[in-house]
Image (tube, rainbow, N blue to C red; front, side, top):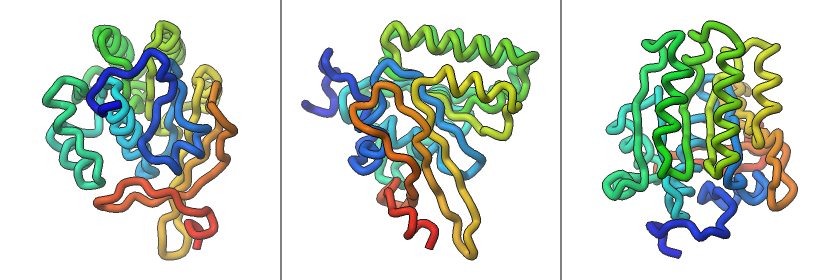
Length: 237
């Protein structure tokens, strides 16, 4: 299938385009799932979401990205630097990028973002990178839970929704229900090990995965290459 064709109706898997990474996620993310990518700052949340975006586009899916991390120009430049060129997909309308300033919206951020997401009816995949600022300014936990519930309903209608989140920004009694609500939960960590930074990805769950998911894998992000899965022993030196 040409990478610019629409996905086949039987196409049920969201591939990252990285075979090793897909294998650790049980073959890829099932289409129509709600996925939480969680981790501290600098752990690789944006890079992982970008890898999934490029893999999805290559496989014929359309993607709408709401980003509080980049402008359109900086996103194109950043992704090109790790061999994830998206410019053609932007030009032909297969990818739409919406920079959002959630911190400026304050308490209105979750509702405003949800309304914007619901407008993107023609896109197969919705990515939010990141939702952290919306949580920080939300009036109460119910608003956040309602946001995830509405995203779950969108998935029930066939959309795939991927949300990145800084775990430490969420209260302990709120993160549990959010994780439970999501079909897939990918947890990224970045740890200091002597003189080097060790990045790991824990595939906590992928409901409906085509195969058994991997537990914890190490990875590097290399200029001109992107995400590269490496053995844990090598990651930890």
